[in-house]
Image 1 (cartoon, protein in one colour):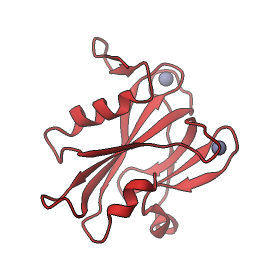
Image 2 (image 1 turned 180 degrees about the horizontal axis):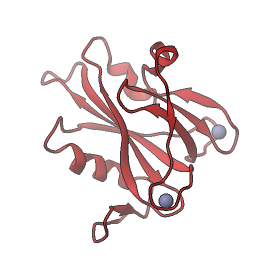
Image 3 (image 1 turned 90 degrees about the horizontal axis):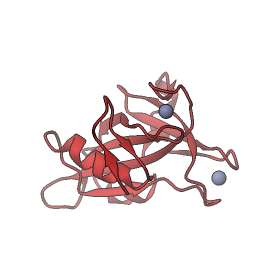
Image 4 (image 1 turned 90 degrees about the vertical axis):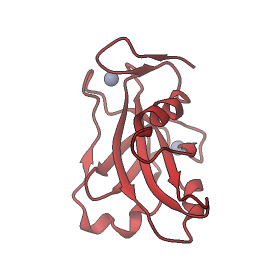
Length: 146
Ligand SMILES: [Zn+2]
Ligand SMILES: [Zn+2]
């Protein structure tokens, strides 16, 4: 796992690089303490991603088996948002890894904020496509729903 920080955008050689990227990205906001890489039930790590970066909702679709999953609590809000599809700013593909970082409250019992990270499958560019406040409890179960 290697992150190349030399170019205009950081790139990662491996899906797991998303964790380090999100740690750096959130260091001066709400730092993440937990990270989960999205993995389809079929075993694939490759997705298309629709999200509304401002409203806070995201839906991923597996490139292998086409099954869809709402990320964390997104289904509750999905009908009210106008999603946009993620596309790589560099190469234009819509194929990505997805990983979610979670910032917890100080007592560690609930999620304060989450960040939906992407890593372009073609060129490796790392980014954060959406992030939103959770701020209610119980919410820790959402960590395993990416
Ligand atoms: Zn799948
Ligand atoms: Zn790309």
